[in-house]
Length: 440
Ligand code: SAH
Image 1 (cartoon, helix red, strand yellow):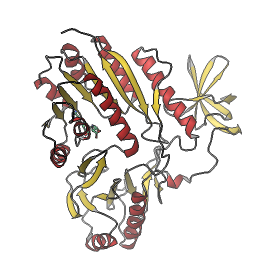
Image 2 (cartoon, protein in one colour; image 1 turned 180 degrees about the vertical axis):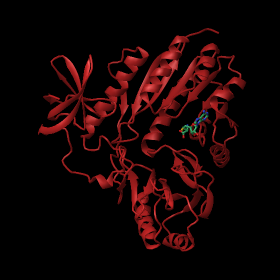
Image 3 (cartoon, helix red, strand yellow; image 1 turned 120 degrees about the vertical axis):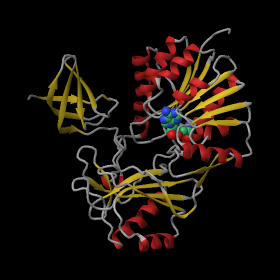
Image 4 (cartoon, protein in one colour; image 1 turned 45 degrees about the horizontal axis):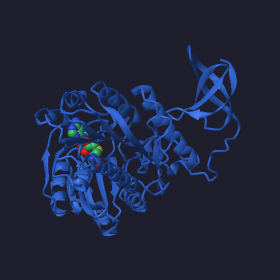
């Protein structure tokens, strides 16, 4: 295949370098924004060409000068070596392009909230252990273990826990689970921390290794506030199933603004506290301008949003599929002295069929996982008398797909703000206000 010389002028949503040459668009795996590269053509399509990086002819002026070792990165930080201003430009453009292309909007600029903390922000990680006991992550391409000493994106508390865990796993000779042979022990290490300095570990393991002295040492290290274990013997399955509380707190504590929250092992919490609080405040501003009588908070988790909104919305109905999260949510409302939230512990697409949406006093807040909304929800909202919707999204493309469907029901995008929650990765968050004019 032939070689071409390309100037990388952009990145696509998978962080491949984008270049133009003789009227064609080129996508070059591993090429960085701003580089001049020699690339080998791999696949030629009608309107674009896929190419492989052969050599960098001129380095990019947009890369940060200090190098972060791969072993300190946990695998997901595709943008880590790009200057922060360029990361922001990439993320803004990504949101604008997806929404314009998929939802037929005409945005040329959007508000975007940048992060103050570029490193040390991440409050939850999931890591593996290699068969010889080294804490690691799976490389995306090969599933090989890449050893992690500490990750510069993690909070300091998580990195301290990682160091102690590593020492103890080696001291007690506990092998990591080996995908290929289906042998070994530790499958998954989930480590969480909160801004109050509390830490939680959930250790997923496959066989009945004797953990007694390991647990004793971990407890004595005093670095872990809450320790759980979860046995999972299914081959090549790494999930925490049933969790057993081993020592310390059953739930760890976090605060957001003036409110306190308890988080159990299986409940969701945003990974970046600084940015998530700003996202919640944006949703709050949007809802304040709507002043609904009733709020349906769909995908409500441990009720962070419901609790932060309960001072000015008379009735809140929170819908969440995870039973542990609903239990946390009830406790969170109680410890914050809030009485105007009710919960439905069901899938949002099921629960909404049972809720009264035949009025215009209700507004909806949604905060779904990456796959976006179930179409049932959009159909019901489009057919309802509800005219106000606030959408928190962690995936611009599914947000754009859903916006298109809401537009078919007469809604329009009033405004949106992008947020850089997951700094140095390709991920971007959005909080949007979607509305329709109706006098019903
Ligand atoms: N709003 C919360 C949680 C957002 S994360 C916060 O900001 O903290 C998305 C939540 O949706 C998770 O708690 C997850 O358990 C829940 N979830 C996933 N699928 C769901 C579904 N089909 N119906 C209701 N909740 C769902």
